[in-house]
Image (cartoon, rainbow, N blue to C red; front, top):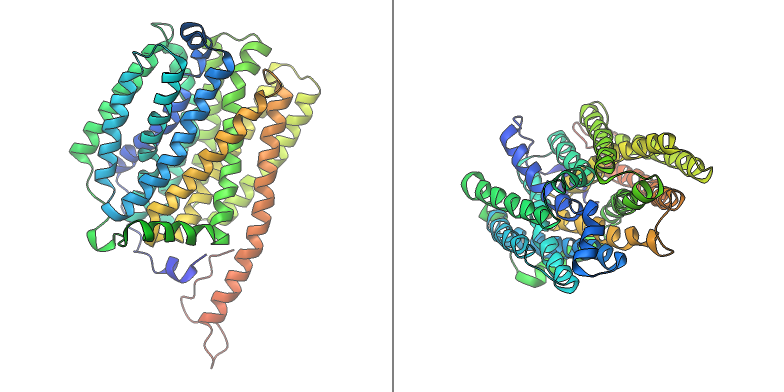
Length: 431
């Protein structure tokens, strides 16, 4: 990656505003809440709209595809026009779309609106990460990213719990009324409290050609692409859990919608613990070391999960191993984006957009694969999760070789000819 530019980033700001972090966290949560809150309502939606279960499951993929496309477009636009205006426009459209879903009568219209809903929800996720990079650098980026990734990790497993509780008081349409209300609240907060974080002098010029150039440069940057794919495959393991668990726990183990919601809450606690550990380790260890530690733990636990599922384990051992696997995501998911964004301060919006697009785009492809042969079993879910984590581990091994080469290159650049040793202040934190 572009190490000299990374070192030239704006100095980290010592004060991390609690209010700003809370707002950015809420904006980050809108994506996961959009595609997960209605999971427990799948059977009811199928019956009400006269659709098959696979058609309803496809609406999850539709929202993920919209989310991936939205991040690419909105993230690039924000590098040229600032963060605030694209965010406000997207939140307004999100609110209108969510309200319109209260009135749908066919699965086709429902699916189309889910694409739009996912597209507009992308603004909160991609722009919150870009705003973090606008305002902070160094360890501060990792600390704030750990808090945002806490939301990214917890929201997908907490949202179905909320949805399941809403079903106790009304139909599945109440869930989308709730999402419309969330959109209104975030829109009001953005309009009244959020200030622009990207100064005019730092905005990208050159229109579409410049935007495409930014994406091309990022896609040809092996360090960035490796981190993006690594985090995408790891997040795909979580999406596999999200899309399959309703069948595994409700159909396989006989849980009610409310009991299923509590299992998801357990996953939220596990991911919360992982992200908090990651945040506490920042400053004591480099993000690369935290990433490697989380990856080793993830591979080990997920392989045990597959073995236990293959042996036909009862509910509690399987659930405990599933929670531990989700906890390792809390270590991995903040670290990879923090490393990638720190190296690209000059195109943070595009970098955050490409990170998100790959994460959710790959999740949209992998998550439905577990249902190809019918309702997924515990073994199928565990195997897909472990497989995704193993691919992430292989990508990390390749990245470590790249980091070592980059470190050698930086040391060579900073070495003085006379002394033959690194100059004072030479950047070393690349491995």
